[in-house]
Picture 1 (cartoon, rainbow, N blue to C red):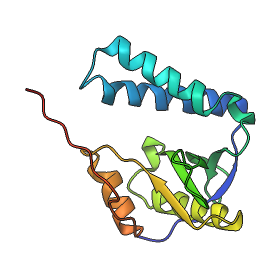
Picture 2: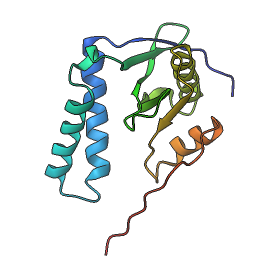
Picture 3: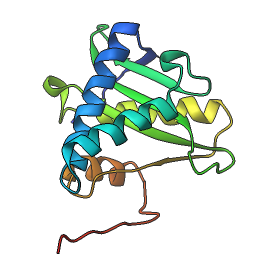
Picture 4: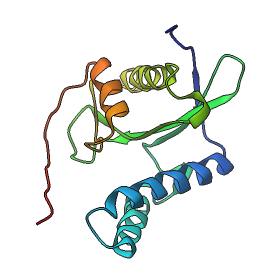
Length: 157
């Protein structure tokens, strides 16, 4: 697969709304496996309010659209401060490659561009969470050199 070339830019207000809606719907879908859907919706909305209190204008956070070399949007990313407070560490809160562009190398290109962005800002590490059954994302991060730093497991009894 050829290496894709992308450019990151700040999301528009419309893109931010669409990305937030998509991210929240996916998060509710995942959390609803282990809790009532209404509680999952409350938790997800609370997370957005906590981490992005000023939306696109939230200081220290980059809400980005990735464009291919023709200027077409192929995905989004959200990167900001590491919620653990780790010095010189950023956190990848979300990376989404739009459906028609998946499995074509755009995820790796977006990830590499985010890494360049945070390195230019003086960060030396990028952390993230990935849902345990998201094999495609896990493979992407492993190919990118990411290692498991911690693991949470659950069993319904």
